[in-house]
Amino acid sequence: MQLYPTPTFEEVVIVEYRAIDTNTIHHAYRSWPQRYTLAVVKGIVGEIRSKYKLVTLPRGTAKMPILDLGYSAIVIKQGASLAVSPQTLNYTGGNQVEASGYTFTISDVRLFSTFEGVGINTPQAQALNQTTTLGTSVSKTVVGTTINIRATTINTLFGSNTQLTATLTIEGRDSGARITVPFIITKVS
Image 1: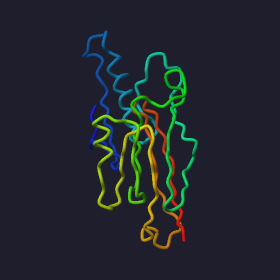
Image 2 (image 1 turned 135 degrees about the vertical axis):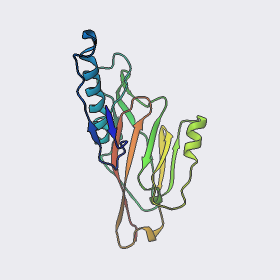
Image 3 (image 1 turned 90 degrees about the horizontal axis):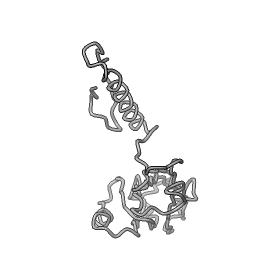
Image 4 (image 1 turned 60 degrees about the vertical axis):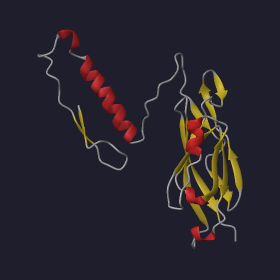
């Protein structure tokens, strides 16, 4: 199997499949390479299209874990603060906060004066949470069980718009469960 070019989210992926000549391999191994290759290709293409995600779940998992925020969209006013604490449903027998926490990714960090993860105190999480941006339009990822957010007070970002929009993606570090919600900041006159 070949994937050309190397898949990224911005590129078109060409999947080249060459059928295996089952007459040239041992009869005991005739079908597994084809089944395995097909499964891997489906997973890769599905993940690139954001339709599927390959996850490894603990033994005995009967239901797919999902994240619950209590919001389908987050709308706050300019300068307002909010703490977001997700919960993982259907994970290890109940609804709980994951032990390793969550990764929180905001699509445009310029819209926030505070975007910090709290609740996980490992050196890796602290290093990720302390990265800064220089005001360019970039995403930012932090780790924690909760994020503290404060919307920007800078009026020039709004221009003539009455609201600014970003997306917040949260992923459980243990379960792999993921949710993406719109984040809207409304201008205060």
